[in-house]
Length: 416
Ligand code: ADP
Ligand code: ASP
Ligand code: MG
View (cartoon, protein in one colour):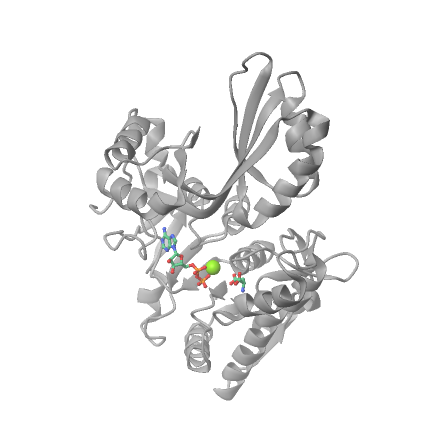
């Protein structure tokens, strides 16, 4: 008998028929003698619908605490429906919201971090033979406020629960049959990877591959949770052995990845924004005085460049996610005078494309190949950043898909 956490995404929970399929699949695993915790997302489109209503009332920046109160309801509906679907086929099941478990988080509403999970009640239910269903995406802070974990956060709930309970495996069921060399919806030749190293998956997720939320990969790595991404759209009654070996396994050992090429995948993030502060006096503390207020406003900064100074003045450019662009511009307009900057410019129509692979450690020439490919397509690079296993470029949003396709071909990713 193993303890297994199943996570089902929005498409997988997208209708009452799909929920019945999830129930049949979960029942199959339970009937095979396993203890099962299920973490579903809201039905597809529901979180967007809830955010849309909040914006109709409060505009672009709805109050974060109240937004979490609203958004958490999507998952609450899902867990109740799934529990009913299991009860209806004669399985004993119980559903809980995050606060009932409790999944404790900090108070950063809309992007809260999980701090602890009390699994006592869940364990007691499992030991009495029940299937336990817990809302994804949410928790509760020390003051009893409902918090959510950021878009795509149900992945993180599932892996964190698996880590806290020392589960034997966390199975992330989604609408694709694994992790591909890039988003198969953008490049039809993309190839499924049988395994992907934890480090590569972390880079791909944090660089925009939304197949897994990046914090879920951090949990998988920190607690060594065996995690697999697989399809929820197959026949729910397919043989369990076959299902258990399908999809993509996140591996913790580099050398087990026999498929290892120099580049394993291409990630992209469409929704970036670039902000430039022109004519700042170049003296110690420039970066701090610009980025300090941005960070105080809880806005995450990604790429950063400071130009060579000319006549004691420099230009400073950084990127933020597009959703935080208006807020970041507001912060900088506020401090512009104080830091002595001439002006602040912004471009909210930029995207980031990254090539990722642990093979880069032992191979040179990846950057030049990437830049040559983009230049052959006539794509201008606005910013570059690198780490040991990735190279990212910022480009005009309208060339993003072209860049991803050209790079996928240039690095031969469609070939095994
Ligand atoms: P869920 O609702 O199950 O959480 P998501 O929409 O969040 O599903 O994530 C699955 C989607 O991620 C896929 O439909 C696919 O379009 C996208 N995706 C992006 N990059 C990749 C990749 N490298 N491999 C597989 N899917 C990817
Ligand atoms: N329902 C949330 C979202 O749409 C969480 C998730 O699906 O993982 O972002
Ligand atoms: Mg998701």
